[in-house]
Every structure is written in C-alpha cells, then in structure tokens.
Image: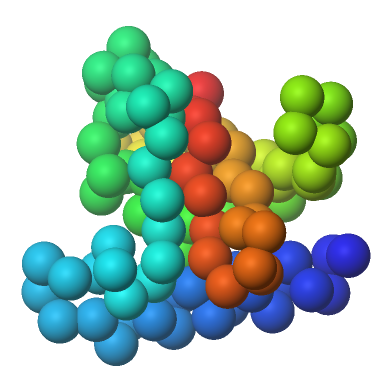
Length: 104
C-alpha cells in the first residue's frame, strides 16, 4: 500500500509541476473537501501552505478511516512561515487523484 501511495503521490506532484498557472487543480486531480476549506480558515493556512507540505513532507503516516473504510495519509511538514502543519490526504477511488481531507 505504501508503494502504491508513493507512486500516486509522485504522479500528482508531477502533474502539479506540469500544469499551466491557474490550472494545477484540474491537472493534478486534487479535490477540495468542504472540511479542508473550513480547516484552512480555522487554522489560518492557505493552499500554498498545503502545497509546501505536500511537496516537502518529512513524514507520511497511514491512518485508517473507519467512516469511509479507506486509508488516509498524514503528511507532516512546515508551512511557508515555518509553522508545523500536517495535511491529511486520501487517494481517489480510481487511484488517479489525491483528496485533500483536512489540515492541522
């Protein structure tokens, strides 16, 4: 499972790198959940902070999500200001995208 996650994660980052400005969401097939948007407001981080963590994560911990019966992954790193930030992601059902679940 970890190898498959790493492969998908790398594919999403590659798509992000190749995407024209302003089109990275569609190109990388990332999906924003309402809870993720809410956590961005509550925790005062933005998408650039989340992307920094995704691109430079120092730790990835798998976590079983009992509600969806899927694996989530907690990626830890720092935001643009150097503050600790963890982004929880999940892999889409078709294994072609990354869902940004929450941040903390």
